[in-house]
Length: 278
Length: 329
Image (spheres, rainbow over the protein chains, first blue to last red):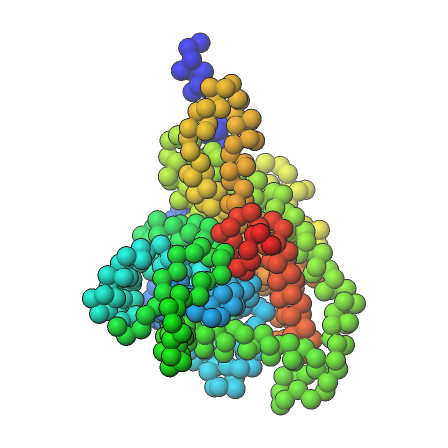
């Protein structure tokens, strides 16, 4: 046997292994997608085969309902609001924490960094009481503001690491040309940090999009429900109509997966950056 | 020049140098110098203080009361909530289940993620596609993941039981989430499906940073694949592995969404986590004081773990910037 063939044979188990894992990853998604094209009766008789006939009503009913689109809108608005606020406030703070030497800087940074330890669940009770007091329940700000606050630590940690790498000569040159601190930040630092800003924005969007606990508690009526709440409600409402729930799940995944397909590189870059710099 | 601010080239682990002053600058000047960076941090500080720190401190305060959530807390009970916590079999069970999840993650999920990262770091056909596929579940919300798998593992007509039935293993099917003994392993399976790709990505990023020359040199010296992995890859991946373990432990301590959607902590508390118990007491039974004590407990456990881990495990990785301790201390 030639060495080439032997090498090929040696890599067969690798392929098999990766294949198996791939199948395990895809199966649930594929099964949900195909099941959505069956009626629930058909699904119980014919679980594995292709739909016959193909039933599109599960999907079209959801798409024709106003509520799905409203949730999509609410999720989008809340994600964008959260992201603008998080990245704006974090960029300003990261600038100060990265490029100034001032008393109390490390204490401040440590304070923010310890915030990485706070999950929503820890603060959700008092947060709820606070939001109730300020009349922010059933108001998108009641979700946007806390999400932005909880998003600050990771965003500041990543941006600070990035801002430190921008050479000091640039800053000196800008200062000599009469640039104020804010001018340098606005005109030079931010444009240069565009990739990092993109990365933290994507992290903020994904975590806002998927947040469940906070919107669940803040929105008691449907007006501002986000997609995850919609999913939970829909499952409760159509518990017996499995095929319909599958269709809804698939449609609820599409925006996130589409976003992932577009922003994959940035997202992965951000995660690895956050993990190594943070 | 509006304000002189001093460039600080020191790495994060060294405290900032005080600005070099030739003569002592006038007080007004120094106040301006201090105010400028302070103003920059102000928006973040306000947001963070009002919506993260204040709630935590408030939870600490409320946890000393017996309070139903209406009016203001008045029935002061000192540390009673905490002593009740330590006697509460459900909470102690939460701790045990949390520990199991952590062990599962660190001993099963992470090695699996590492193995996959090593595989996908080689020249495989379709490598990019696998990478993208394994990481994809990370962007799905836990709610969607939870509902999806509660349907996959539905007794009898879920996909899992049908597959088992079709190969004649009906006896093995049936219970999954509905059974006390199987609920945690099933939950763990779902967590692995959702999160292993995330850790795999971290490891892949770490593997990219290992110079190929090292492997080449070892190969020339006659080291086998296992030896190269053991003596080159693993040690050099150290920092990445340590971060990934850290994230996975913190994640396990704070698990909520997935459990809430799938089992609400059932059957009979067998999949309950600290966050779920807190939610039950806070928003279902209105024992806000007691629920706050659980929150604080969760926070303390996370914090203590983080500090110990930081001091003992991450000390060598100067980049771990949870606190800005100097490694030499």
